[in-house]
Length: 265
Image (tube, rainbow, N blue to C red; front, side, top):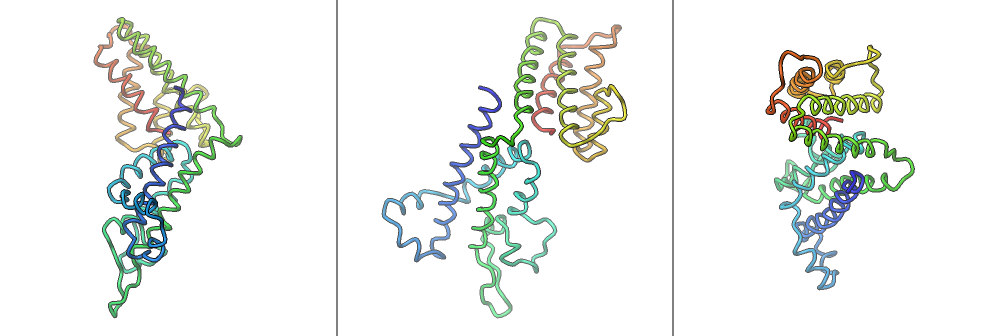
């Protein structure tokens, strides 16, 4: 299965679960939407009553967040803001600023006279916006506007990492390390091209890419340190002929390379 196939399968699952979450949301709000709920057929009511939003939303949110980061990072902030507004004060809660995290806490806002100012139905439009963002990911795959170059490259990287694992298994430690170094450099080069970042050096090394990504705020300090550690092992494999790399170091390099290409983009 290619990376593209994996993404499509994951998206289909997220979209299907999103439909179930919508049913769960309306089920939990059936008192607020009593007139509409009463008009449903017995079969439709049964589907709604089996669904739960609160029990299943967080896993859907976390998985969707990961996919959006990779495929449509320009919509990431929009997606997160429907869940939570970090700088909002409790005195500023309205239908516009109510979030899904408020709903998960059953928050209802009342005015000075005890009347309901904002009720839980405010979460419906927030989730609908999140669902539409996830749905648009699938549409992007089906559009000629989507550049599958990165997905093809990801498949190649997976194959190269498999080769590195086989070399390590057969005792060719330096060769395995060299492959991981090439994979990381290709990955970082692709990130810089996609983000319009320019390197000052004609032939940048891993540490050059690492520093640029940190300076641009794309990676945090712990990730920068992790990549520096991986670069040290790669350099040991490529350049230091006096000291032999260990199997433990190569396992760290291979595992670290897999994690970096999955989480840094």
